[in-house]
Length: 567
View 1 (cartoon, rainbow, N blue to C red):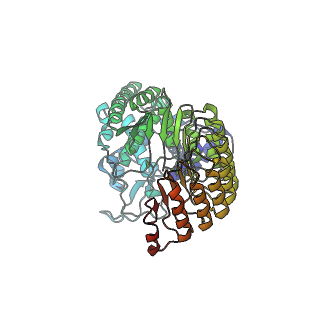
View 2 (cartoon, rainbow, N blue to C red):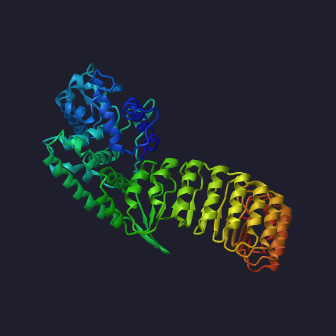
View 3 (cartoon, rainbow, N blue to C red):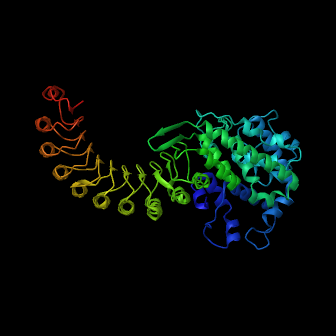
């Protein structure tokens, strides 16, 4: 991912800006460079910055040592800190007493670097002794992984022990980045090792440190032959585990799609593959997915994770569908998915904090390939500006049949833009606008789109601030429509006059099957009007009037018409 994408994670944002002087020197610019990095790169960076604290030359000056020189000169420090981190990960310890720190070979000079900090609020055997912890539990995982690679006492068999300890426990539904150490006043009895996240991070860093791009750095810390052996063992393990894990995923078939329902462990697997930067392992994972619909909902995926997804699914040979609803990928995540858009026919990004900027990227990319069939953007932060970008997708992508863009910040102008685009489309079938305050003007624009539309079957304008005039326009348009089967107008301001307009429509329209007028302002007068109209319409299946201005005693006046639902 890009640095901006990683900055959406509070911990990484802190690390990146803590290292800003380093970036300023390396790239000679006052803004963050638009370079591609992974999580291991970030932790190598902060380690380099801390190690250079012992160097008198300022980071910004031209005399700064290279990363390789810095790590090589402090190998013993890296080993002693790694030994402590590894012991803690093995024993599920994150607080160390003074005598433990000394036994691991950590010197007073090492402590002054700040990688280990003094812990507060812990009782020890000797009350006057200090206790220490890594300034973040993920840094402890990083040093444990580094120790597994550069220590002469770690065999290839021991290299993978934390992978085997990562039993899949979906009930924990672990988040990617623990926040315990980011709280202003962390609760000291919280245990950051209560789930296996520290092990997952250790494995992640192991993959990153043994990746080919980092080989040049690591070979100055350990013999090349040892690196080669450990890389081969890791690559073989990943190859086998990718195959077995993908076979175990829940699968089902829905129409033309073969679905897989990914679990949080699947996301960890993608992250590890991305850290290796191995195209071979990426192609292998894509090949073994054996599905064309990947469902990654509620996985706590963030924008940086989209790089890992792209790294694997980019290798798909055929078109596929990707469901990322209910995550937190935001605009940066959309940008990270750009390599996938040439093959994506379904993209669901609902509830992901996407703004107009992210929609602009979607518009630019989807219009290049014109293969998208379903676009889900429900409950994001899209305004009228973004609505215009979406409208251009509807107009230019004749393959698009389903659009869900409800619960955004779209008002009258955005509603008009979308309505005009729907009017021009000959293929759009399902449009969800629930919760966008398009008002009567927006409703009239959609009414114009409805007239003689050849393909639109489902339309939701619920909770849109639509009143009598907007309702009348829609009802009149439906008299000239033979495609719409389902129409939702729930939670608007439609009254008896609107009900009378819909009653007149029912005498003409023979294709509408479901009309939802739930939670409006219709009284028994309007309800009876609709009931009488049903005598001339045997085609509609239901009219839902729940939550209107009807008293329970009045329900009896409607009970002889089963298609009117009031409760």
